[in-house]
Image (cartoon, rainbow, N blue to C red; front, side, top):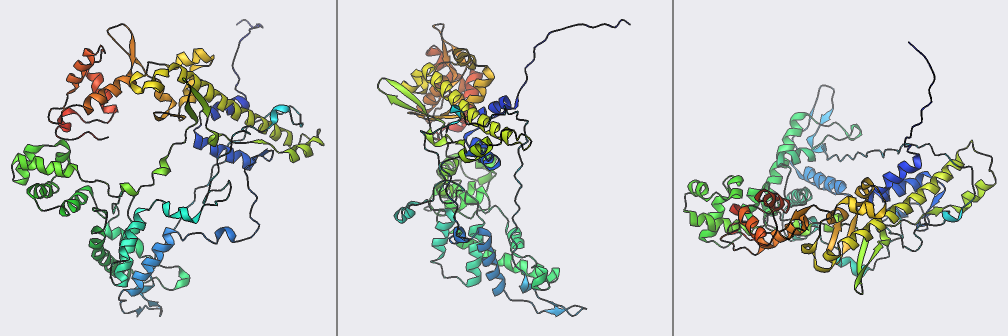
Length: 547
């Protein structure tokens, strides 16, 4: 074995903490970035935001108008039910303790998940504690987004009381208003209250009555007395279940029709019962008792055999069911909870388009002048780690600025490449891949992929994810390529204009596309149709296309 020394040169990429943070911030969504900014503001004393309000010095005032939680209101309702129930005679055990099932109460536990701490990085400061010119505030010209009412930061809510009536009405509030007009005994009124508060967002009573009654009966704390025997608690649970069952018909007669149903079949049945008595309604009522998979497949032959009626009546009943609402609580849904906040806004400007960042998502951050000035007098104090924290704050501000600059550059390149879409709509979309934008901007494809993920652009045609503007191309007779997005839009347009009695099959759609010079196979048409969530031709017959 021969030993010796050799010299070899090699190159490798070292990801510094600054570069790691820049990559991580680039792929965060708007909500995740806001959470990251809040975490940095809490951890780093050198970071500051101008929109932070002064804390209220008066103790107890922030909680003066705090609404009662759902658990507390449900507890009061359950306590009212239990208080008015006939209590079995109490008995004494061998130790002389009195057992009374009327002492049972509702327990409402809330578990909070601890917020995971972000891993500490090894930030190497340059030893400088002076504020450099580039340490000025980022996003100074953009007003920061503020949270109101229940927000933890931002300006206090100074809303006009006249605007309170325009607040969206929840399903529970709508049902409680109707319950006020019912003359029910106190125990049944409390049971109805518990049922209303147990509904999900779609208006269904997803929890079974025995489970709901078991949740209302719970042993009290040891300080409140003896919890009672299992037999007594079981007897009270049975009485609570009977009360809930007696209050359920009152709930199912309320508006919207179908609310309080335990499943889809019951929801449809409740809505059919409200219709005018007709042969079609009677057929629809019989269809609601059949397996739902047969209704979904519109299997008229099997449904006709199960219901004992002809296929014409079955088709009439299916037409009635198709007009029903499968989710009664849909119109009360809080759609603003799922609202998408765009990162970039595109506006028309003369004959072109103006692309700019949404000022509501740009954080306004700068270094804390007072703390940085105090550290300036202790330049040699590096053991405390404060110079490293100052350097970390500087890099965070720079990485935030670099993130939004990259998003803006990529967005402008997309608008320039997809100009036809912004003028004519999605039918004018052209093929585009990540490599084209990467080569134009001098960036890597992975960077473009991170920028276009979970980032949204507000356009004159709606709000779209940046990835929406990228798509493969399909060949045409002229030798060019058309975007797959434009082909999907054309398929949707063809299906929307098809006759209801003779829907177009996937092969017919493929032939129509070929007639327009687009080479699209039947399998590709089926894939695009499923991506658009459009049913096949057999299920679209005599059924209008959902918007």
